[in-house]
Image 1 (spheres, rainbow, N blue to C red):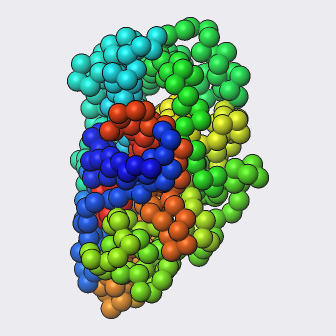
Image 2: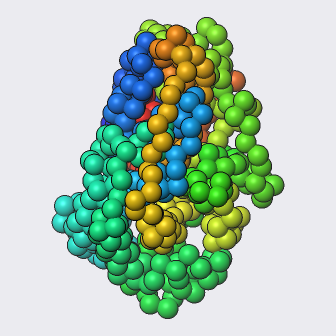
Image 3: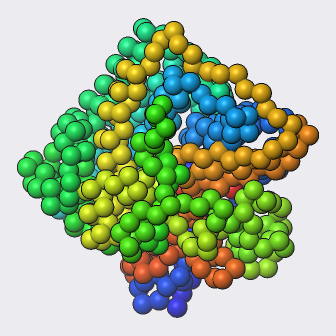
Length: 485
């Protein structure tokens, strides 16, 4: 058996290192190390509660809207306030803009460039991949960067700026949208739709959303071979074995995304149990954070985040990361776009996961399907805005109380647990999506979702940064700076 340390990873948000035990050309076990500590949970202590709206977005520059929403929802719960319909829809639009920008970035800039590595030079699709996805040079990379730039202009209008948008408040959005702005926003959404329908899918979004099974997906692919980047990805998937690479833990979590004025969520909250092929209810009381293998004090044992603590202990024996190990009733979970779509009943992804599980292929496919599903919803939300009606309600915070704010970032379930005493923050605990996915072993020795997914990955002779490991890691689209908040 040999040991291999892979990292730091490029094209990953934040610092990441993976230690692998390799035997007979396969990963036998893995330890995932988040190497940087930032301490936002300590920074927030003893601040006025509303200060969370300033600090929390700065946890991360690429998912700052999601952090703002989680903080605002915790404060809204504390104050007992609900945003008006316009405010709710505006916040959904900002969240969707950021999430879809992340999906686009992941596919074109983070994931697909791995297929222009020399290891794939003999594959029949290699020349096309080089022309499309070579970093800084590929035709599709350049188009995607341009589309992303124009797309993020949406948040500039909706929220005033991005990142670290300041208009998201407990009572809604403080940035009202007038009729002329709504038309300009709709134009931007339709420009993005055109990019997706021309370059990524080479078909109308509604056609992708309507695919009800893998048989329909492969039949669609055969209609126009080589047209669009999704078909390129599917060709690579079939040739490279991505369908069976990086299996997930079998339990998938979503807090629910895009609440509507009538009270329902577009993507509902819950758990997807792969073994039983069903959605199960989520009990927030069953969440705990285990710090047995983190450089953090774990003398209190696994704690619910409402009672959690984050006290550095850098010389702790047996620790290998700054990341805690969140668990639900002791179980290891995966979260992300795939979890959202499984729980929401998306038929293509349920069919694909029933065949091959949560793998590199299904994780990436889920992000692309989500792009196709959400853009038409954004068009509807924009048309549902009522210029001249309220976007915001004033909220008065109590001096004492506890609350939780939940949302779905691009990478999955994000939760903020807040306690206020005497008008000051007494506790603030955050579990980010990558905290779930890249968690270390817990006190019982159970590896986290990525650590499990890496087991069995092939390592070719002479590889120092195994390409299969790169694919698996990137399929989760990690955001390490959120993880080590």
